[in-house]
Length: 249
Image 1 (cartoon, helix red, strand yellow):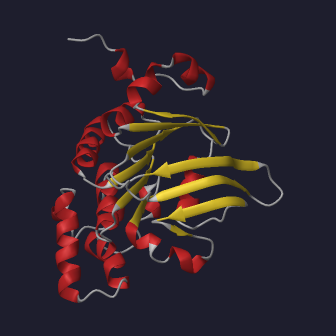
Image 2 (cartoon, rainbow, N blue to C red; image 1 turned 30 degrees about the vertical axis):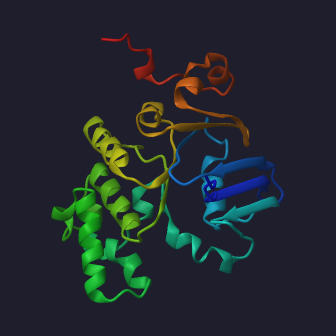
């Protein structure tokens, strides 16, 4: 049986801003098709920086990056990557900028040069997938936090990516909107990488967890093993998910 080609492969990748300390240190990370990876860490551990590197918005200081089997170095190497990997920003307001929801979700497909009929079908399917078709004519700034998050996800889906990269997707959501988001993420068949402080969401959605600490990967394993390792969580200033502490019914 032939092994699946990694989607993302990082070898000894380090990054830091000019004149500052390293934010990421000698990262080795492989993402395989079908992975549902949660990345957990205290603030300042490099989660968002890792996502920006994968998208080519930052360049590593050292190490090698291969994405979809191709080594990536220069800006032109990432043109195809950004069509196949959809990034959801931590703040939905950073992702929504058009006068209406419909125009916002259509922005990506239109800039891909798709014909108008295909754009319409793609946008309709993306809004239906997140349960936001009724918001199509609304202005994004008039939406609730949960509605903004759903529309931002629709904008990513409209680009037809094979991989979803989500930065703190449940941040700022009320309990109902959060549960709706978790159900939505569980329904997607995409390969997923989710950075989150919401460890219960990670437990519900992900089948693999990376623990980062001070720019390095401290542990990589199944959620049950990671969240049962009390010493690891303590060392990384994390606590077990609340649901894992509940007694069985």
